[in-house]
Image 1 (cartoon, rainbow, N blue to C red):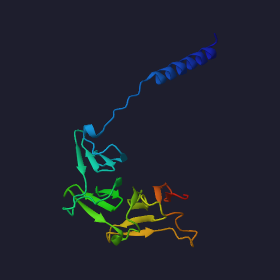
Image 2 (image 1 turned 120 degrees about the vertical axis):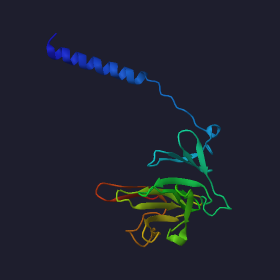
Image 3 (image 1 turned 180 degrees about the horizontal axis):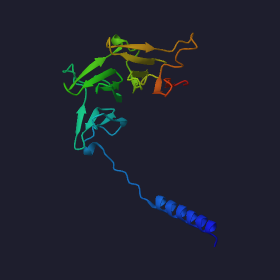
Length: 205
């Protein structure tokens, strides 16, 4: 057998063996539920913060996991510094290590050093109170997606956080303006290397 043929043979043999090993691997999944300390089994969002801790957003509460146990954050009507009421929907972290949590009743900023929440609503510049997305772009600007999660109407919009004024600047759909958002329900947000912000909505990109 010629050397070139030998090389081809061994190459094909290696590919077959490698493919067989890959397909023979057993994949297993560990199920973590309420029995293990999770507040609720319906998980809507998962996030790992800059400290390495995991956060799980459920319809019942926000769960902070340190590798050993879950710490749950819920609304306490008798504590103005607790998480806002409503269903928790999404989570992110800003450049100052503050954790932002969206609910169907507003937006929260969590300070881990004081263990307290600051609550933002339409009074702070948000165009709607139901939060669907939170995204920190490459320039450390925090963007908030909103939408009518419960009613399904064309309500919501997009906003960015002005840290100097502690207020939000919002953008909404205008049926008379072709250059406005295509829809007020924001489903996803991301930026690219050219500085463009891409916004997914219920009616276009």
